[in-house]
Amino acid sequence: MDTLDERIKETQSIRDEASHAQGLLEADFARLARENLEETAALRQRNDALESQLRYAQSQISTLEQRVRDKRLDAGGLLAFLNAGSNEVRGNWPRFRKLLGQFQRGVAAPPSWKTWITVEAADKSFRMIPPYPGPAPPDSDEGDDDAEREEKSEDNPPSPDPKRDVPRGKKPRKSQSGSKRRASSQRSVEVEVQCRPTVHPESDVGPRSASEALTFTISDACALLPEFIAWEDLRPDVQWAMRTGLGYDEAVEIMLADAAQHALFHRD
Image 1 (cartoon, rainbow, N blue to C red):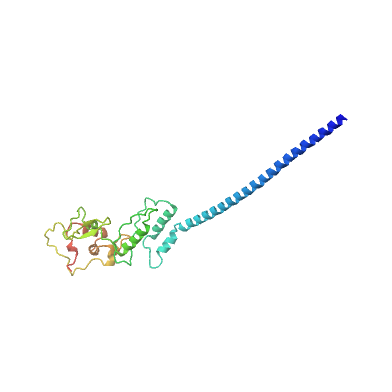
Image 2: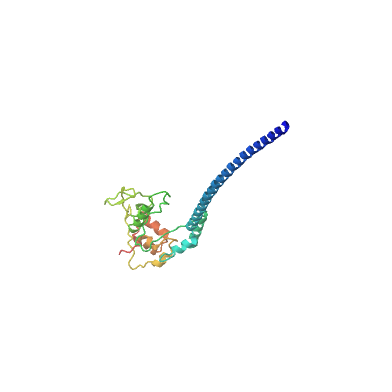
């Protein structure tokens, strides 16, 4: 009898332990299930945020790529723009297009190429424009100011460079008449243009006879000009010298020489 009671108690004890263990396991399972749900919700929220960021990044990349395509230099399109309306690209335009193509590809022009590019504003009465100063710094705030100054420089051309009218090997002398020009640095510089030779030897040679016609017409002289040099850009004395039969280089050299050249010109 005692043995049966002991077995019943032992069985009940085992059942109690099993029930307690089952309760603990169920509690752990419930806790893990809650944690899993919370972690799943957090991961889903994080995934949604990352997908939103990805879509925004893709949109930005697409926008930037479109900007790059829009800003890419189109050599043919640029030439079409430069030839639109009253504008015209003259001379060796294929070389100009090749240069634009080299720039578009990021490749330097071949060393053998020697190209001069001249821009003429035919609607302006003057031709005195300062040399190209180079591109402005990309972060400079003076871009708009520079553009405004360039517009004004077209309407109010600068004074000619005095060095261009000084004979070779000679230094400019101080002006006796007090003529001045204002330099870009706001310094006042006195300049005198030499109008006659330093030494004027006596000569029996007079000016060109009025009955002696000029060798070339203006059209004939224009045909002797190098490429990209316009007849309107030449000084009147160089124009006249070329009409007497001289080539461009020779006419310029003679007019820059420190010697009398009155024999080339008519008295009136």
